[in-house]
Image (tube, rainbow, N blue to C red; front, side):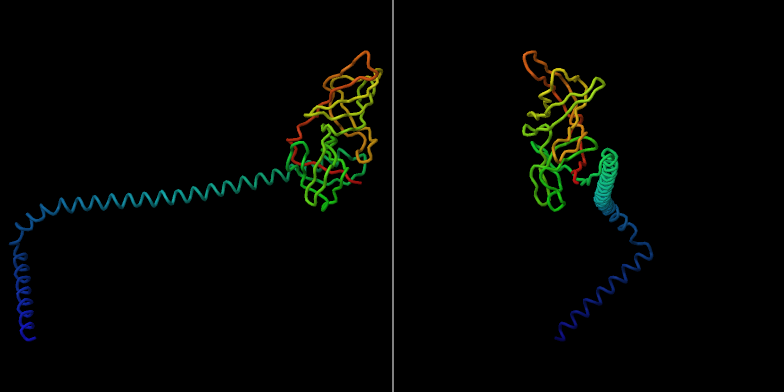
Length: 263
């Protein structure tokens, strides 16, 4: 044990003496030449390490900036999407409010309970987002302003199907009105958007451009609703009656709000 202690003391003493010698040589500038040679070797290495570390730092900083920019861009995109959504909702609400006001003006001559509803689907039938839970029942008329859309065919608790005036199953007592007089007939739906005003007497005046209105003989359909506009008059000399082709005055697909007519 004592032998190891003596050996460690000798080693420590040698290291201390060497350190003191180096300090003295450096103090008297006797190590400048060896230090210069050593620095010539180490400075390029040090410079290379410095440039490498600087490049890594810049790359790391670029990655951080890119990540931060991506996060900011994502936040701005989400914010813009939210603004667009709020704007769309506001425009929809304004459109619905204006449609409701226009609808009340259109049927101001009569007293009706109007249930506003949104179209949510359209194929053969128009699907609306009101049903039996909202008081909607089979047979009620659906309108937009003073225009007839159709009648309720089927009712679920939260939605309903509407038979359009252009549906082949639709039959409505109607008349056309012009400066030359009135022509009565039955408006029959066809496949597509076209309708036929049938059973018109030859003596009754009707021409292209005349508006066609509901007669009001059906229990649930008010009189005077616009059913469409005459696009062609078909006359045959050997027939008792003449016909007129009728087209809708607007595209149902463009409507954002329609109304179910109640009592």
